[in-house]
Length: 79
Image (tube, rainbow, N blue to C red; front, side, top):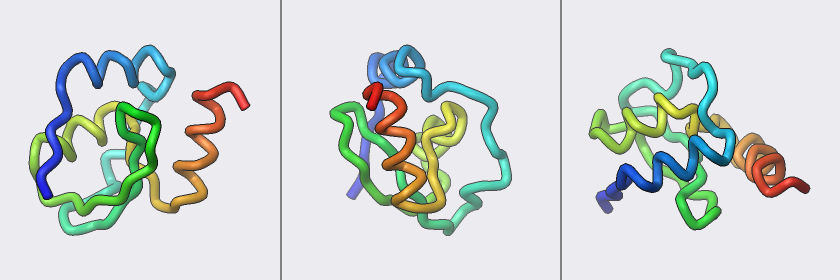
């Protein structure tokens, strides 16, 4: 299903500290990845080259494993 990331959601992620240097090699088109949505839920998606994927990559919100996403969420939430 298509997911739309709105500009204010990107701003919230930046303020939450997700914005960092990002790995341009992951996820490549067709790769599965985990991400944290604007409600703090961890979700899985496939990089199909849409703008949503580009935004997530640019703000370093793509994780290879569920565990990586969970660790980042704990860091964001101050746990």
